[in-house]
Length: 193
Image (cartoon, rainbow, N blue to C red):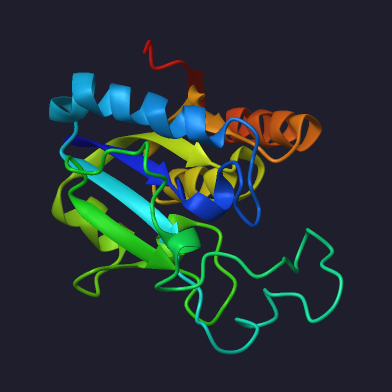
């Protein structure tokens, strides 16, 4: 019975100065790195996801043709191979065991919608490694962190959202996401870093 850490979308386009920069994103990247320095050995798996959108087209309507509605359509962000799609430089990734890319040609919020570098899925990783618990950290609380944590719960994993290692787009929607996660069975906790 193992434990995983999910690091969701800590990318340049989602931290300060990026196409969809979230306040506190750089601080979250640095805090996750401190957490990894102290606790990486406690995890059987450390999975980091990135939006990795196709450079051509609108990625299944994900990129807005005109004005984005910031619900279903967004400005261009995290295009595969661009600096915006890379991990925030404050995130130290040496301890990451699996990198997941998601949103290639289609909208994708949960890391469960992505694939690992060898073409596998997160669900397959959980099964192969006997993962029953997962800590969740990353960006953004109200979108991809929320979706990833809900999918983990759906897969039968006991989820702990590390509230000091996340950053959200807006306070109200982030609070609503955390309440939804708590009602779904997630534990809201701090990492202690």
